[in-house]
Length: 264
Image (tube, rainbow, N blue to C red; front, side, top):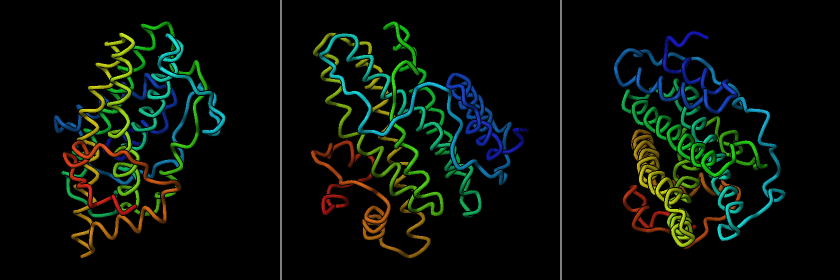
C-alpha cells in the first residue's frame, strides 16, 4: 500500500503483524509527518482489527497466568511482557484513531498529537522488548490477553466515545498503577526496568492529556458538557468499574481533576 497520506500510512502500520516492523514504521512515519514530507490526511479505511504475530498466544484475561514481581526474574519478565503487550496495542490504538476518524473535520493539531502518541508508544514497546531481551526473553514467549482491542471495537463508531474510553479511562488507569510497579522493581534491585517504566509513565501523562484536550474540543463544538458527556459515555461503553486509588496529581496534570471522575 502506498504511504501517500497519513491515513494510508496508519493503515500500513495497522496491517503489519511483526512488532519490530510496526515499531520501525511508526517511528519513520512520525518523522515524515513532523518534517512535512507527509502532508495529506487522506481517507484510507482502517481494518476492524490490526494484524498480530503468531505469538503470543491470546487468551481470555481470566486465563492468563499471574506472576508477581518478587518471584525472581520470571515474575519480572511476566510483568514486562504484559506491559509490552499493552504498548503494542497502544501503538495500534493511536494509528487507528488517526485513520478511523478522518471524516470528523479535525484540525491538523489533532493529527500532530496522535502521531506523537503513536511514535511514543512505539518507543515504549521497543524499550520493553529490549529489556526482555536483556533478561533472556522475547515478546511472544508468554500468553497475553485479548481484551485490549475490545475498547476500540466498542467505540469505532464515535470519536467522542473513543477518547472517553481509551485515553481517559484505560490510559489514565496506567497513571494510577505504574508508580507502584516502579517502586516494586526498585525494591528488588531492577533499576533498569524501573527506569523504563518511569519514561513510559512520564509520557503517558501527555497521552491522557491529548485525549482530554480533544474530548473537550469536540464537546465545545457540539455544545455539550464535557463532564456529563464523559460520564454518560463511560457508563455506556466501559465494561468495568473505575477503581481507586487514583493518582490524583498525575491525573490532574493530564487535565483530569478528581471531581471529573470521582462520581463513577
